[in-house]
Length: 407
Image (cartoon, rainbow, N blue to C red; front, side, top):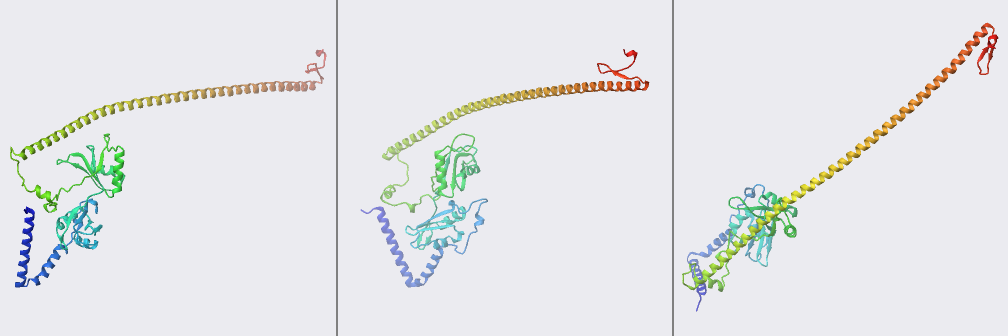
């Protein structure tokens, strides 16, 4: 018994045969062979639509946007055999100059990096599923191999602070704090590096240590970013249509009828999913309670730590004050001793000065007496000589006049 898929394939083959026969008949009647070259030429022109047109990258660049980043790198699949880098560059020539072109000729895919993200989005939208040398090519954004997911971000971390914090590990292309529909931070972020070694370094450093971005001492969590295609999704033509596919697609979308077999097990699956949801909610509540408890303990410990630091600072200041008082006391003592030495020195100099003055006065007095005696003797000699009286010296050396009165 033929399956639905086999019947469908036979119908397609019969339709193709009828189409070929129709074309042959038209060719015989109207000379369609001459028009075949024209159709082929139009098909070749559609392979690279708007080949004569080019986009100005400057018109699609945001202010301050970095160019030729990983976010503007495209994956091109289902390439015909023999496609070269020059062919791929010609195919994307309309979208400006490319900085990276790679072709895997054995597996029929390649990569190309355009100037900006918007240019890459336009190229993807226009060239995806278009024929290239008889084969529809696939154009997708390439996976960013140097992107990291950052969690547990504090509330007051901005894009600029996030980039500044992760720039220490390497050159960054983009750093974004994820917000909700009201612009409130979600505690998550994305960091994209220009190279995989820089991303690996950031991942290893943050995993081994505790990287804190603000005064709040909660370290961030860094993981390789899981990348999803939320724009194109999975189209029908890309599904692998195997035996399991046809088995699952036998029934259309529907609501299970109450009382049926599938309704019973659908409700059991629904109860299991509800239990899973409750378990996740319970885990979330427990985690929030644990976080609040840890924050309370942290605040108490922070207060105690601050009090301890204040006490240590007070003790340090008291110790400094005591040392300053000791130094001041020592300085006062030294100053008093110096004053005492200066006073003693002054007294000693005064005493020496007094003794020298006394000595000088004594010598002056003795000199005055000697001079007075000599002057008196000379006067007496002169006086006695004037009267003709001889002078005589007594046993004391005093000159006496000769005469009766001397006896």
